[in-house]
Image (cartoon, rainbow over all chains, first blue to last red; front, top):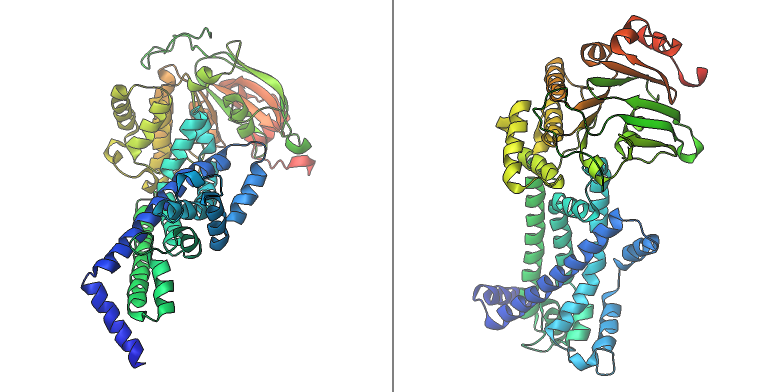
Length: 235
Length: 259
C-alpha cells in the first residue's frame, strides 16, 4: 500500500511539475489521435452520409460491413497495417513503419467505421425528416448532402468526439505499428503498458490520470455541446 | 430548352398569365404494394384563385398533391404543366408548405436564405427578399431566433414566408392551418390571399369547411382515391353534385369500405 501511495504522490509530482518526458508523450498522443480522428471523420462522415441518402448496388453489404467493423480488434488492425507497411509489404517503400504516421494510419482505420456508422445514423434520421422539404426545393444530391451535414453538425461533433475517445485510448494497434520507441512513437497507452511491466508505476499512473482526465474532458465537452444544441433546438 | 417565360414579378396583376398553368393530370393512379390509394384521377387546374382540395381522411388528397408537386411518382398517369412534363426548372417555380412545417436547424433568416440559395437567388438579393417575406409574415422581429424554438403558429408562418420568398407561380399548401389557433389561422389566410392577389396560384388542402368557404374559388372534392367532383366554390356549397360531398358537408360519417 505504501508503494502505491508513493507512486500516486510521484505521479502527481510528474504532472504538476510538467515533466518534459511526460509532456512529450502526452503531446504525441494528442497529435496522433487528433490527426487520426480528423482523417477518419473526413472519410467516415462522407461515406456515412452517402450511405444514408443514396441508393446504390451493394449499399446493404456496405452497411452491414460498416457496422461489423465498428468492433474491429485493434491488434488485428495493427497486424494488417504492419504487414502493409513492412519492407515486404506493398507500401514498404514509404518506410512508414515505426513512425507516428503509421500510428495515425492504424487509428484512422479503427475510427473510420465508427465515424461512418454513427454518421449514417445521424444523417439518415435527419434525411427522413427533411426529405420532402429538400425535394420540394429541387435540391440536387450535393446540396442535399451539405444541408444534412450542416444541420447535423452538433450530432456529428459528438461522433468525432466518440471517435477521438476510441483513438486516444487504443493500445493494441499503435504498439504493433509504432513500436513504442522512446521520443519517437511512445504514446500514453503504450507507455502505460511498458512502465507497468517495468514496475515504474509513477509514470504509468501519471499517464493514466491524464488519460482519464482527457476522457472526462471529452465527455464534459460532449454534454455541454448537447446542452447548447438542445437549448437552441439545433439538435 | 423549355419555353417557360422568365420570372413573373411578385407585384404583377392577377391578369398576368401564370407560366405554369394550366396544370393537367390524366389518369393518375398510385398503388404502392397493390393498394390503390389514388385511382385514375384526372383534373385540370387553371390559373387564378384558390383551388381547395376537400375530402375525408384517406381520400388521397395529400398523395395527389405530392404527385402534382413531383414529390412522389405516380404508379400510372401523367402530369403536365402548360403541356410540358415536369422538370427541375418547373419544380423550382413551385413551392409547398406541409401540415407540419419542416424547418432546418438554423435561425429564421438562415431558413429563408437556404431556400433562396437553393432557388439560385444571388447572395445580394437573398437578404432583401428574406427580410421582405418575414415582414409580410409579421415575424421580422424573430429573424435571429432559432427556427425550431418558435411557436406552432410562428413556425407555420415562417414556412409560408419561406415558400413565398421564392415567388412561386404555384403554391401547394397541405393543411397549413391544421392545429393552429384562430389568430394564427387568420394570419396564414391573410398571407395566402395576398399571394393569390399577386398572381400565385394556390392549391390547398383543408378539412375546414368554413375556411374553404372563406378562401376557395374552386373545390376539388375527393373520396376514396377519386375526384368525386370539381366545381366552382359557390356552386359546390350551394348544391354539391356528388352524394359523397353532400354527406361530407352535412357532417355525416363516411367510413371507408362501406363499413
